[in-house]
Image (cartoon, rainbow, N blue to C red; front, side, top):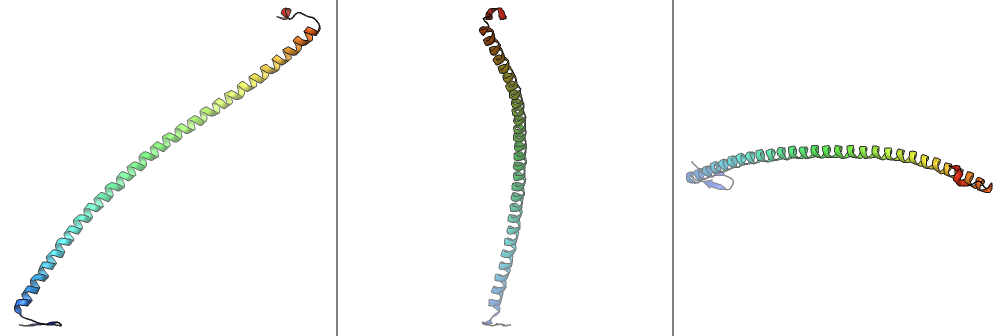
Length: 121
């Protein structure tokens, strides 16, 4: 039997060669598909592991950020306490300064009256 194609006629021997080439091509394609599937599995596994690792890193960073934020909040509270303490000290200093100035005035008046300051104790 002769097979007719657009390019010409083939004899039986040529047809068997073409069938063999086609079978080899199908087997090669099948092997390539199997290899692609295995490669895809490995790629998905690597991506999944990478995603999990990235998620762990982000969680660790969030924990570090929260810890740093807690330290900052604590330092702000401590600073406010110090500011409040400084306000109290400034009030005390102002009060003492007024008392000192008042006593200096009293001493000056007593000196004008010629009262010895040693007796003021």
